[in-house]
Structure formats: C-alpha cells, structure tokens
Image (tube, rainbow, N blue to C red; front, side, top):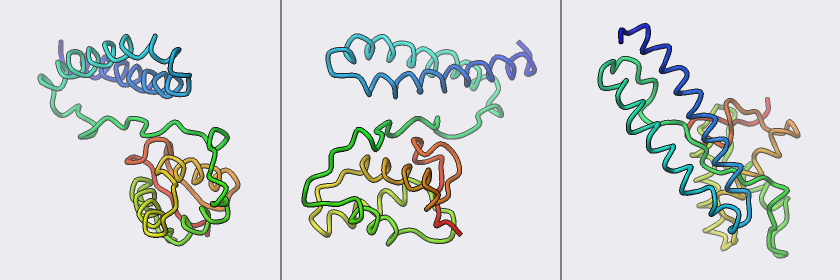
Length: 162
C-alpha cells in the first residue's frame, strides 16, 4: 500500500468512525434493556476500527494522524430528555452559563466545566451533561454562537452572540 492508497482508505475509516460514534449516541438514548443488546457488539467494532485498522495505517503513515484523540461524542443528552429539579429553573441554568461565557470562542469542554463548577459552588444538582444540553438550546435559539458539533465537547467552541 502506498501513501495515496492509505490516505483514501483512511478517509473511509474516519467516515466509519464518525458514523459509529453517531450510532453510539443513538444507542445511549435507548433504555437499559435495549442498550445492552448493542453495546458489546459496538465496542467490538470500535476496538477493531481504532486498534487494528486505523492503527495499522498510522504505524506506516504517521503523517496521516489528524488529531491526538478521535473527536468522540461526549454527551448525547438532549434538552427534551432533561428533568431539572423543581428547585432549579431554566433561568438559573442560563444565568450560570452566561456568567462563564465570553465574547471570544471557548472550548465547549471548558465552558461546561466552568459552569459545572459554579453549580457545585451554589449547591445546585445539575450535571455537566444537562449544562451541555442547555447550551445546545441556547445556540439553536441564537442566544449563543457555536462552531463544530457541540456533542463533541473537546472539538467544538461556543461564545456569546455578538
């Protein structure tokens, strides 16, 4: 296999990795019983893809490595799946999120982490995934701007709408 052939195969494998990650996110939305049927089989495929196929290409052609870590979905939780405690309102969550936002682009992971820390300080029982789901709603309602797939926290960015 020459570099050109490896590059072509690499592109197909990355497409497959993204598709598998999307499938994983969809599976996580299933109930526990249904999820169990797919989880082990999917992990077998993921392991083969990353440990054997992609690793084989990267061992021979290290310049094809596009990033240190595959930009996997960090959370597939959607706002319509969230049930916040009665003691916390959407406005409370929005206030915390806006308090850690800036006009400059920031990694989604950083924003979620800072907001989560603020929730802890205030004693609010809000998870990092709930905060990420709320950020997605704020982006859709055009109160925030985003770059990238916000489900992939390390590989997306948000900022105040400006």
